[in-house]
Length: 230
Image (cartoon, rainbow, N blue to C red; front, side, top):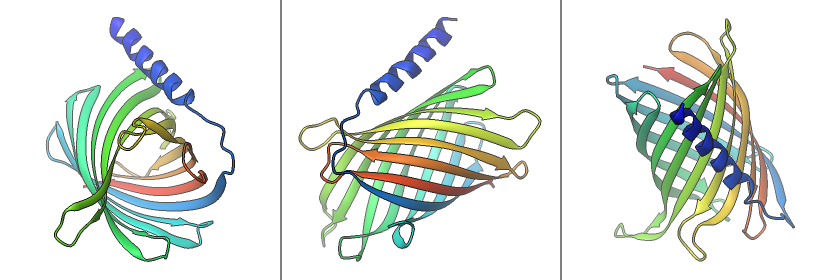
């Protein structure tokens, strides 16, 4: 009983932290984007899981190439309700002159989960370190450290292959001046359809709002995903 009370307290406190951080968004720009992603998982044993994800994004009302991403990660289940994972992402993105630039990112996650009836709740804490560029001898020229806090609720409709989910996530910059600067909020709602024991399609809508930046962007994003267990 005490564990359930503590878990609920963590979820509600995190939600209040994220929701109370909003600022007035004057001069905000808007865009509609589409993302396409495919993820492949391989279970090595009862505790360890490896995954690879390929993603393509389009912006400017989904008419322009934005970026291509490849992410490789490993996940370790400590218990039924707590896991940690880490990975590396490499991607090509377009600059202001529409030239392609290579970027790199390292991330580390800690995720706690809890079930309330038919609803599965999870709280994910992520740190990611983004390497913006490398000079000619391989030294890092610029980088950033970001803290992310995501709360998610998921429900599988009994007797069907359909699941629904929703989440909210806050982004905080830990480097720069001032540190811990809240700069983005992400809201997600979507559903999934299980094809068989190994494959699943998902469709989700995301709303992203930027804060405390010059010319903040509000993004409406439609994401089509496919996942398969190898």
